[in-house]
Length: 311
Image (cartoon, rainbow, N blue to C red; front, side, top):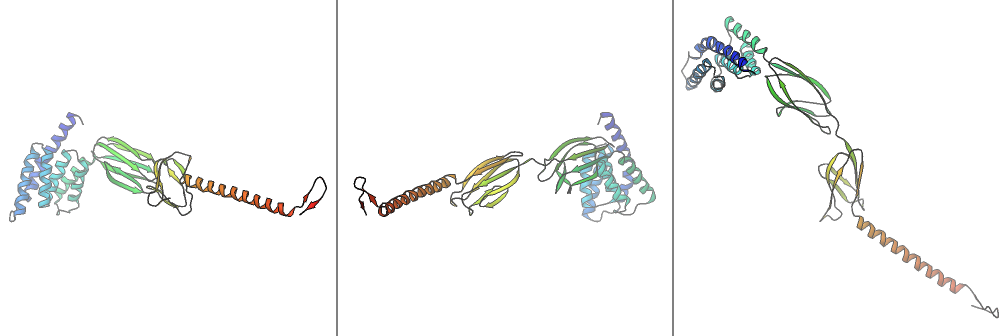
């Protein structure tokens, strides 16, 4: 906001503070029976003097403390003036609405008219953000770090904002989060559409030599006898309890639209396979020897010279 605009705002707020606050202040001075009232009145009067000199931030702090001690309509009105002076138009309207609803006591027609007139002026300074957001389940919208909305799918909503710069964040599980820094001017209406894209995924396949072995993918889950799942791209820590006392650990990176396969216990599997092959060879050799022995016993021997047969 330029220097001229700031000066103009200060003059408007000065006039409101000087003309309207004393009339309201009279009510705050009518009863000093308790310490709370005395404290609230002292804070109110110090803030009133600050408003007269356009020192809105200091006045706002004193008025806030005064209102906490003793909530009154005069304090609420001056809080609206001070809030407007420091650029908090949304807060100012909130205070004026409380006065108009008689939450702090009924106002006569003249003062109610003043409240309504000021509200019309301040409302023109408020910006409006219209947001259309789409995500998956549990989509969360945050404004300057504070939760704003939470929903599933798509939704459009609006929010009144003071002029200034904000950070808007939209996030949803299994989707790429969006973060935007936006600026809204006084009285401006801004429309923003954000559609979250699903996080790319790949398939992770883990094999183990035994159906009883537990496989764990950190931050994802467990499987018994292996693991097979579609996962968001990124690094993962995978462990297999082949030896429960010292599980084997691998670090893998899942890539988009690809299947990543890892195998635990390969040495053990090869040892078993080799042992099986050796056992098979031994069995075959032993069988051959037995067959040879049997054949040598049952087949008659024929002498090539005399044709004599012995058994």
